[in-house]
Amino acid sequence: MFRTTRASAVLALLTVLLGVAVAVACGKEGSPPSKGPAADKLPNYEVAQGFQLPESPTWTRAKKRGYLIVGVKEDQPYLGEKDPATGAYSGFDIEIARMMSASLGFDPQTIRFRTIASANRETALQNGQIDFYVGTYTINANRRKLVGFAGPYYMAGQSLLVRADENDIHGPQDLDGKRVCSVTGSTPYQRIKEDFPKAVLVAYDTYSVCVDNLLTYQVDAVTTDDAILIGYAAKLPDELKVVGKPFSEEPYGIGVPHGDNALRFALDDALEAREKNGDWKKAYEATLGLSGVPAPTPPPIDRYPAGS
Ligand code: GLU
Image 1 (tube, protein in one colour):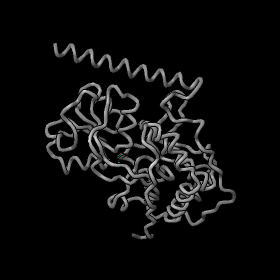
Image 2 (spheres, helix red, strand yellow):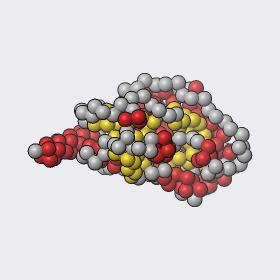
Image 3 (cartoon, protein in one colour):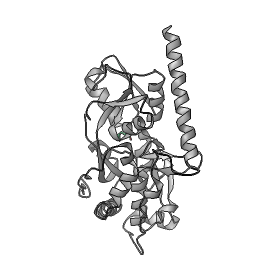
């Protein structure tokens, strides 16, 4: 009896998911999908003419190449999403990458985006696979030993996503014995492991796989930043909800190769300028803001000195 109910619930959810996929795909034809990034409201970022940054090895290499290569996520609604049909990327992080590109003198249309999972960000920056990384990347002391960070440009906080009919989980204190999914190499994974050891931690490479596991009753909760979880919940409001209050601070930075302080400071300047001229807010409102949270005041830039 229980099995049948469960199986039909899973089937119903998959049908809903398929419906969403079809609706999103159809949205491309005419008006933008009601809950996707509002393409028509996105700012046009003016490309800085004659911009030079010869002190930055990363910028110099990109200049020779003619375009930037930026690491991002592809499965995070409103933040970094790749349209499977067109291959086009959209979301708040993507907009941050585009405005940074314009400020560094590169036409944002020419950026090559590369999807890089949380666990591979530092290596990708160290190997020169990407010029910089914009994808819900928390600035912290451990990572700063391996890479540099411009920003922060947004402040998120760790939270929990559960099925809409879940009544027992209200915060991380309720996770004892529960199956909780997060992503390898992420700060939320690490926090559950250290601070809530009685939770049964399940790890994958991406949050969308965690969400699939939640919808099919393989896990009881997904944990990561509220900004990410709110996006998934907004896409499936009848199936998913975010519960409790954020229980950490996750300042999002732009990851740059370690030691390229010229690039880091140029990105700090660019972020400050885009926050001042309104581009940051416009980009937020056309992307992450669509998940229902009004534009916050961006956190102050932490221009930490070279060598620290
Ligand atoms: N902001 C957290 C982190 O950088 C979680 C999101 C992510 O995995 O990108 O680890």
